[in-house]
Image (cartoon, rainbow, N blue to C red; front, top):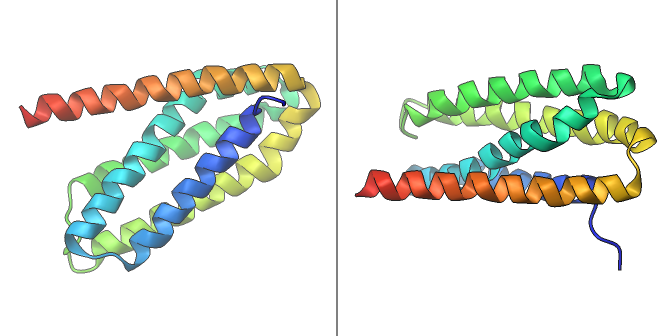
Length: 158
């Protein structure tokens, strides 16, 4: 049985994030905050691991470099919006909900470009074996970021 390639792993995570956004659209109050926390725990390690493992490899390829740089900039915009949302609560006169919608749109656009443009470009130059190795490296890096977040949360709770 073949090992998953980086494209498979990222696609699965994109679907998980999409589902969280869908749930968040209907949520209110404490449930919305809980879903937002879960969303961040998916999005932030995903983005950091892409930046550490996947994007450096794709930047090496002339055909994928521009799209990769655009993805990096989109990550920065998502980070800024997450920081704004962190400073708010869901009952800010609908502003929080509006920012969640904008975040969902930004992430959706990013996913569409990544899967529709970047992945096909990368598949032209990244071997199947290397795509499997990238998936393994990505998973290790992502899991390390998840552990860092959990440690920070434990420290904050103490």
